[in-house]
Image 1: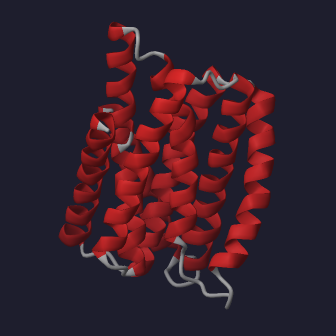
Image 2: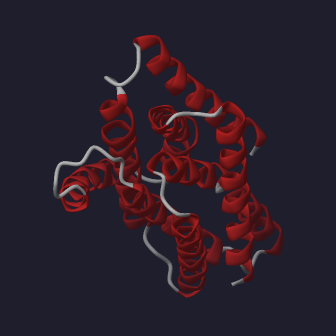
Image 3: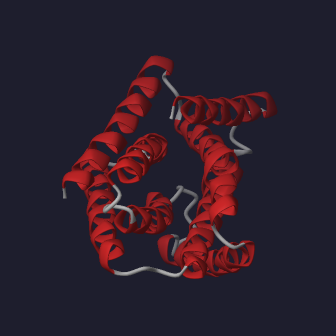
Length: 227
């Protein structure tokens, strides 16, 4: 639970940065949605996908992406029963929860190694800073209450702690972890494009559209350099 508390502080720090960013630049709802979409694309291409391809079998990741696509179609229909155009914060939350599982189980497997365990734990907790930024940006774009975000952050922290404990006793096969990571990648990619980018393309000029996406991508790149 201590590690879960550290993760909660990490996503909260990322969320605080997103809130300050939105206040300083006074972003519109469409702008925040595009910013979040660009940020998620950067998170995928700069961090999650390259790391996943280095650690997990490519076939497992590809199978997971396919499953992620099918899961996205089901969740998308459930979260938008009236064809609403509001981006779903909960689709993104599910994707990030799935993304947390293989990482936390890896930490559970190396808890006995004090040197490596501390290094990978620190890296993983810092890794969740941009996830806090993405979730908060999505929440601000939807105008939801802050308690929704707190519940999501707490859920991420509990999921992180539980699967660290499971990983300490159960050695999940790399193929299974790769599939879970692929599902997460598929959900994040489809959510960023279908929920945050495409629905807002017609509301702004092409210049503004590209500017917000590029700004989000550059912010993700900055997080990548820092973390």
